[in-house]
Image (cartoon, rainbow, N blue to C red; front, side):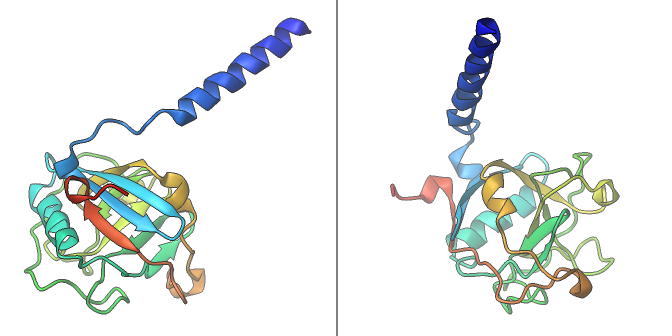
Length: 188
């Protein structure tokens, strides 16, 4: 009995230590801080997979394009979409031209960040992106993977979900409070 209690205590300590570990080391030039009302989401951009898309995200973040932009489409168990700084409803884009697809073999699983695009046009990604709540093999090779969440999935899980009946449209949606490139971030 004492051994079992000691083992449980050790297991609890191991879990606490693991949870206290900092996020994986990332390159500040290719790391995004996405702040919400519930906390910070840290995204590692995959410039090795999608250099044009990663550069676009960094450019727009530096222009404060994403600040105060809503998560306009959030489907529980699937993904949370944001990035329409033009209209805020998923129909807009930035002042820059659309980007050609940069597909990879990285699977769409929990925490992966992908670029949204219009309809069936592979080369129509612009400013909008989505964060995966769960695995979705149907997206593999169909959308550009631009990064992955290295910390803050608990924050992603708190994003207000939309109506299933309206394809994830969210009334009174949560917003990106601020989004910045880690290398540009001021000490808080």
